[in-house]
Amino acid sequence: MTMFEKDSVGVYYNKSVQTNFWSQDMPSVQQVQQPGLPLPVSPGNQTTRPVTSAPVQTQTAVTRPVSDKTQLGSQKGSALAALSFSEPVPAWSQKQKDAILVGFRAGLHLAGITPQEMTDLLRKNGISQLEINEQTIQDPTNAAEIEKIQKALDARLNHPDLRALGQANKVSADGQFGKSSVMAMAALKASDRGQDVELSVSPIRQQTRTGCYRTSEAMLFNALHGKDGTPDAYTEFDARDRIRDGDMGKNEFYVASKENAQGRVTVSKNQATKMLDQLDAELNAGRPAIVGVSYRKQDGNEYNEGVTDHFVLISGRGKDQAGTFYTFQDPAGGGTHKFRLDPATGRLSGKGDMVGTYDVTLMQTAETTDPATLERYQKTGKVLYSQGQSRAALATIQKQLTAMGFDTKGTSGAYGNGTAAAVRAFQEAHQLPVHGGSIDTHMLEALNTAFAEHQKTHPQQVMFQRGESSADLIPLQKALTKLGFNTQGVKGSFGPATESAVKAFQTKYQIEPTGKIDNQTWLRILQEAQS
Image (cartoon, rainbow, N blue to C red; front, side, top):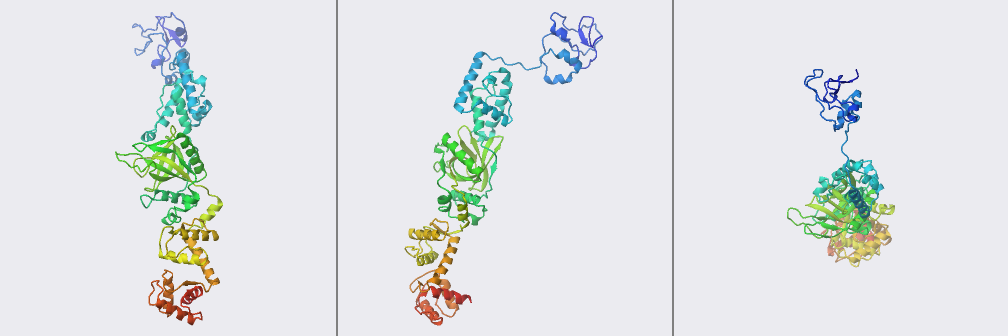
């Protein structure tokens, strides 16, 4: 007898295996394929099989889980060969196929993406190996794979992080690759902005409410020139002149023109694309970028100060399950956060140290980091005085500059246009960073060195005389008093007592006793006081 034997009523059964449901009362291949054979039944008077055997009651093909195939031995394989274990294939009418094709072509036209690009994107992102073209999308046997693709796109473009920012793009999973699927693939393409980049930036917290731009500039300056984020590094440049006039101000991209009542901005997709391309180029070149942002309304409160409310520094780019993000340093609290890219609009949005959600409105990028610029900034020191200020110490600087031929148009200590022009001329003459609007530690050092040389070559040039006041007179009065020539006070005022003390000093050291402090008298006073 063979493995399958016929019982007394003409039913074939497997007598070798009697414990597995799927191995009992299994019809032979011939029974399934030949119509008219007796239905397999289990008569009550048969005792050759266990009571637990499950009779097959129909010849109709039974759909069983695919995993059950592995439970059947090789001897049962031939009996199962004729049974169907696959899911039913959807039947699409020609009208449905035509509709899918029309939507597919419309999506290609609107999104500016090709079938080959979509195929490459699916494979690059590990979503599917399906080749996307007009034939495959109309083939109903691909419906399950297309549905898998749509679910993967939905997981990426409808991520909770994007929903929280109002950027989610819901993708329907219907197994039909029409217009919406093409647009989703275009969004996936737009969100792919390149490899991860993370630049070294020392976060700095702004010192005043309106200091966000200055602080962003300081972080950019430090990143460009390898400086740290200490307070001294922050004040090593004058934000109004150094970065804005030197490295900044010409490469600007405005992407938002207006905002609604909630503070959400209207973004130009074309401008946003240009901005993102430039931003990526800056990051790839190792340069951060300053961006302006608009606050959105939060908790019923308005925080808007115009289209641009705040400034931060973008310092990196990365990817995660929600797509591309850009790292930014927020000077409001010194924190590090992420902007998310909405590929449908080009908008960058994210949560920062301030209230609500930030929408990027504009971007400024560094103009240059060529060797000459780097060398120039190596000469940059801590800013001491800026145009618009009025300080007693500035009067001496003005006097020194004027004495050397850089006329400040007055020596009152007020830093006006005349002083700015003289400072600029001095900086040009001594190969210093030329800006004119401020005096830093490096310029003051160069000024003192240059003036000391000038004093030696112009000994009779008078610097101080009776009736003047200057902070630089104080150390001279102290030195004269120490040497025994009492000035009757060391407050920087050149009165009769100081004049008498100067005359006495000049007489002792064989200098013409004019009572005025000329360059040779000044140098000799300091020399004798130090000996």
